[in-house]
Length: 174
Image 1: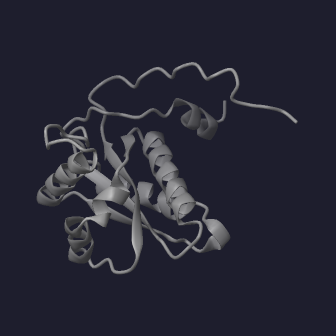
Image 2: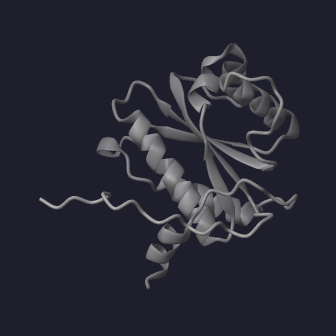
């Protein structure tokens, strides 16, 4: 089987990570894959914010719990030391789709390099808050951006889960 197709079929969400940081070289490769995601009319509305700073990660974890409607009682990033926040320009009609494809490319590229990933939701809610907006300002991000997703990255602390069988009614032919 073609390696790309195999990677697409075997990638799984990873929710338990070792303490090992993703190498800068691998991270740059993953980010480059995100940059080459298709976008509506080639407008490239998405941007990526890489967070590895411990304090900012802690703030994101707390804001994510709050957005989920619960106390800061667990790590919704599952111990990942790297979070790539994907945001997209709200003024572009395809911004949500553009950001979603970036997220997909990030996760598939990570898997191809032996790095675990998972899409963590609530980026939109996080960056609608004043504290979320302050994070963007802190890193020089200006504009009308909507959070699309948080891509957590790291090395899996467990075996990769076996894929569940696909549902019978996934494909219809016309």
